[in-house]
Amino acid sequence: MASKNTKVDIFNNSIIMSLFLLGWPMIVSNLMQTMYNIVDAYFLGKLGKIEFSATTITWPVIFVFISFTIGFSNATVSLVSQYTGAKNKKMSQKTAGQAYTVAILLGLTLALLGIFVSNPVITAIAGEKSKEIAPYAIKYFNIIMVGMPFAFLFNISGAILRGWGDSKFSMHMMFYSTILNTILDPLMIFGIGPFPRMGVIGAAWTTTIARIFIGLVSSYLVFKGERGFKVKLKDLKLDWFIIKKILSIGFPGSMSYTITSLGFVVIMRFVSAFGPSVVSAYGIGNRIINLITMISFGIGAAVTTMVGQFLGANQIKNAEKTVKTAFITNFLIVTFLSTLTFFFGAHLTKFFINEPEVIQIGKIFFRYVSFSLPFFSSMSVFVNTLVGAGRTGQSMIINITRLWGIRVPLIAVMAQSWGFMGIFYAMIISNILAMIIAWLFIKFGNWRKAII
Image 1 (cartoon, rainbow, N blue to C red):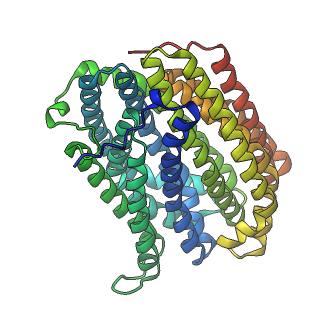
Image 2 (cartoon, rainbow, N blue to C red):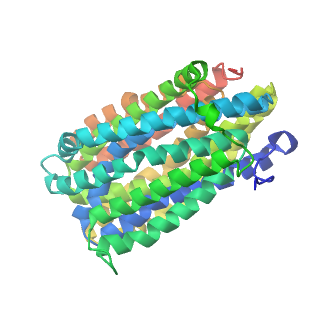
């Protein structure tokens, strides 16, 4: 039975109410997705810093592959939201069907490519100082790749319904997936009950099983029309006009996220050069930062939908007001949370790994990086504004500049002079400058015109 209360009607709500109604389910959904990594990290931390570091080293590489799919998910949100705002239901559904076709082909291709390149790439990232981590990391990565096509199916399903105005769907799906992952993690990592003790491999399989589950179930529900938006099998038939539109909007975004992710791979190589203790502390710090910035990504996702629908309906003033309200709300929330990490960074690090050297480095990480988080997270509001407007080429410029134009060169220079502290300094500078660049695009750019 289709739910009649899943769609948020932004045209009959206030801006702040629509941001809340669209944003909070995405925040919860993103937080639960981050819990995948948090739960894995917690249990693997009990095995030791080598096992813990395996997931830290592989994550930038995994994110390269995930990132390539994000651009096409964003293109789906942009098109479905603008067609929805223009009251063109037929094109909304047809676009959704073509997005699934792209997702299936792309997901399978990326999974096979990832498995093929895993050994040389991960070995190179680990380097000589962290070479004992590499065997664990390669096995973990290859199993995660098995679940990649299903993760992409879920992302597209969520993107379709988010563009239509239903952001609770992703939250509900992530809830069940996270519960499954959390239950299986200790059983398969430590060998409880009928399961053998698999360690790092067990953590990889729990995540993969959860992703297979969420990809299949979410796709089934969209095709059944359970949420009020129904994709039909005939919508999967190739329509090159729509596919070209998805690719033209999605490819710049995909390249943006992919090239940005490659920047994180390079950064991980610099971090690995300082050994497992720094890798572990950096990994913990990034996981906590991700937990905080997931709030911003949730608000940003709401902005994407609202800007897309307002532009589709030619309500420019409301689109502009959405951006301003989201920016202020996000900045205040993240400032409060980053103040907590500033003071309690050592305790957060100890929660995962109770080793004095790791705890001390973690404390330093949070003391330095925390105050730049409100700036970095606010950048995502501006970037998502450009995505909602279909200006993915501009969002690509911002993301690439932040990593390759600012952070990577600074780390290369500062790590030589200040060791691992140089990495933290570079993160601060790049976070602040990135927000300023993104704001300039919003202030002076051409995003206020619809693309449909």
